[in-house]
Length: 209
View: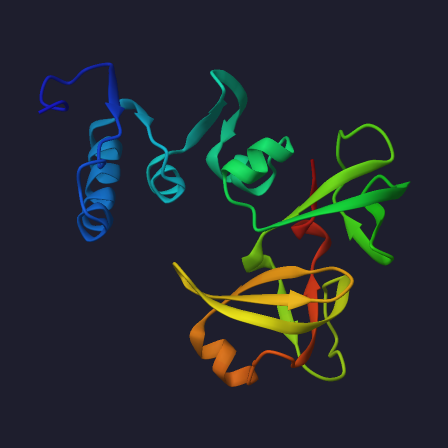
């Protein structure tokens, strides 16, 4: 009904709050298509990260009544501006790092004695928080093949847990990490608690906050 009057701006406050998860998943694409086809500018209020990703082109994060970050949705999710935003949007790996060297195209970092390389940042000072998404980490067995990933961390599997889109593999070591893999990948790699692996991720996966 909200679209029928062809408004210039439509506010949708928690539009799926009363629906069960299957209904939300079914209706989200329909709402996205209605927004696109009518050309209506919509402001969607939600506490659901998946809903924000599915519906929005731009988003703002409000914490304690303040707008703390705004921009294209993909940018906000990939490069949170602070630890508070990173935790709110669900970044799985928040790693304290020391900045050893600032280069135009990358920063040389150190975390728990492990050398890392990350993207340049506006962060001031010598310490920061490296935000690394679980889906951006590869798990490698045995000798490392040729990889474009510049960050390779020796670990061992500590636990495997269900995730909304696959399985979370928790890795123990000097630098504990959480990796998101498909069930098929976990089975193919033969991952079980105690198995030695190497976690690899690209420079572009490391955003400093």
